[in-house]
Image (tube, rainbow, N blue to C red; front, side):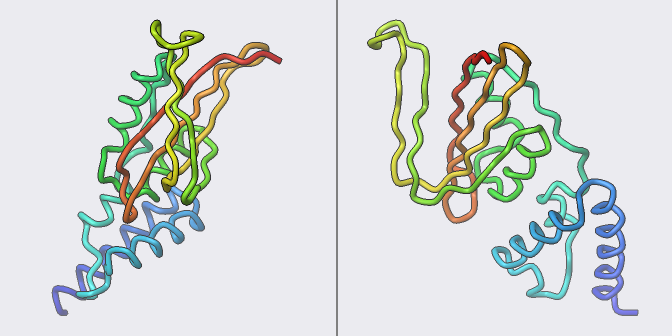
Length: 170
């Protein structure tokens, strides 16, 4: 049997078993189809282990540690989703950690930070005309902490992460 055909068959079998274990079939299919379109994965009729690994199929779910400090939270997200990662993978990782995410194209968001020198002790930086995924999560009951992350991307790859966090009460 041709080596390429054998590798393809083994890759597909591994993919089927890992995809049912780690992801819901629909999400994996959508991610793979998007990845195939951007990477031209079938140019050589071969699914490679490394390209599937980039989609995080062979890895355990990346568990994120939540930090009250937005700078530390940005570092945590960048640890899980390095600059240059595929944006589809970034969205999956954020959603695996409880965030609700949506794509925004040519949009605007504000990055908010505490600052001793700014009026009202809050510095707000506006980012305009950028493509990003907006991710949001609340944790807590009566008083909850809210994290909002904007993960900018260009050509399908992560370029910047911005996080704002704060408390809210019901």
